[in-house]
Image (cartoon, rainbow, N blue to C red; front, side, top):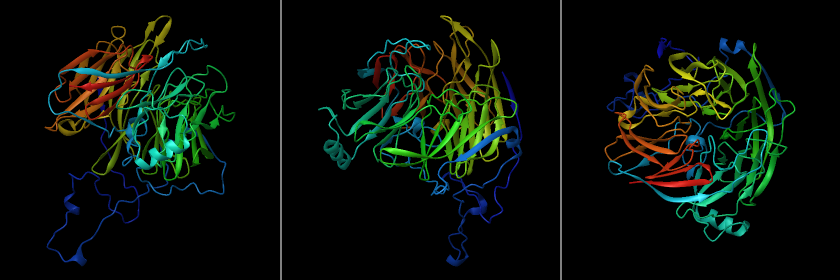
Length: 532
């Protein structure tokens, strides 16, 4: 393992007379501290600009790209940059919100001693053979469930307009998309079906998104073409049916029309990225969306890469990664690239953003897909405003051959920024495949990129870790592996507090609600687990 550091240079973002202040309530620059004894008219109020500048750094010259506007009558300017997911009554998108930094966090009162199955919901099992194998049921990668707490008025609206509700329909609902090609609705309390399933025709591997406007729109994309066409869709949760379908895009630069990414709504627009190498920007209304514009790009010396990861967003900047190793920052107002970073190899893990002293930083890591039988998983921290690398951590990995298929080493999990007593750490899982099928859980310094500790798992892990806090403000980390183990770590020390075999294969990422976990397994089962 080799650590490469690079000194951060300060970049002045705008010539406007704004002073950028910290978004961290616990950190304040001495220059902006206010003397409470000063006259009111002498106090200068500083304000952080809502929109980041429309600019392009020299790294963009590495790209070939095309922007097409389909709706010239509608301005592409975002109405605002408000985080619509912060106040959502539940978990509406992959990793909770636009920064993909898992704001949802569980809570326990004491040291955990066991994990119990509160309920297990069974999906159908698809036995149809495709050119990509048989996909079965349950959930795949990333396959994160969504959780919503419906208000009384929404409950009443569903009861009036939706004849698919079951007697188990309640205010707390889990929505999960399955590899069997169905969308399931589960009563969070009982584990019983709260509505009839919706047939979405093809296997779903990724994570959907509930529109935070609560207009009834649920966005999901198909992952495997069991039958044609394959594409992305809008499900109207009130009508309980697919109301919009976007099939293969003949103008895409890559001929693979799967959609694993979880979309986002920002400033009045829906943003969806695809494995066809395209970034789509839509206006939206109840039950439908309208294409506003697209961005297609690639490195000048390469073909277009596909995006299995989900876009992260800070203000009006969006961040994507693809399976050719490109990390791209985009101005969401006009889809113009702001900066580009080459991270060497297939990057399926979703990028994560976090603020430090008012500056957003991006964390990302790649697999080793294009490097041969052995290679490096490159983990990086970048200045999200400029694309400048702060540090790079290199972890050696191998490919594994199993059942005639090869499995790449590297990082599939989305990183988890530490909080509480672990606020200086970053957590993730890496498939080292050394020996075959091996994987490790890592704690990494946010400041330097150095590995603080590494713990061997019983098997490699694609699932993303989640946070649990106790009454003392101490962070525990729960993660799962690809043969069905669930682990709970002491985040600070790396001590393994619990290891328990529960599922068949937890490729999917979990959500955590209080002392409960909801996660899907390959096979047929969706679990609600209780931490004791």
